[in-house]
Image 1 (cartoon, rainbow, N blue to C red):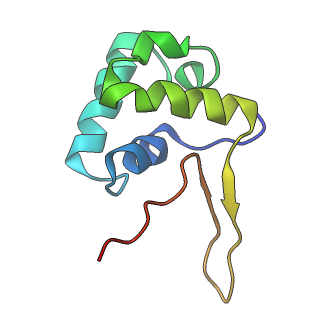
Image 2: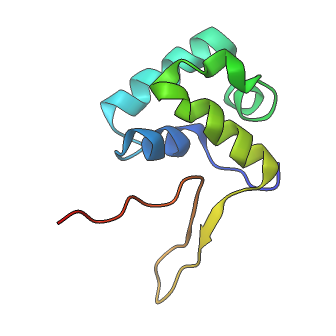
Length: 93
């Protein structure tokens, strides 16, 4: 993998919540129970095996992550940078 994003952060991005949110934690533990260790999910799990999760967004996130198709946002003035797999949603209003 060119970039490593922890699975809870990936799920949080997909669900639009923080990685510590209950929904993320529930889905994370469900994935571990069904598919094994986190690193194996991120590196080896066929994306099609999770195509039903969040309308296929997890499968697409795994494909993008493995291909290095990520969005890097550098940090500045004491703030950490971030790595995302999907562009941010445009602001509504």
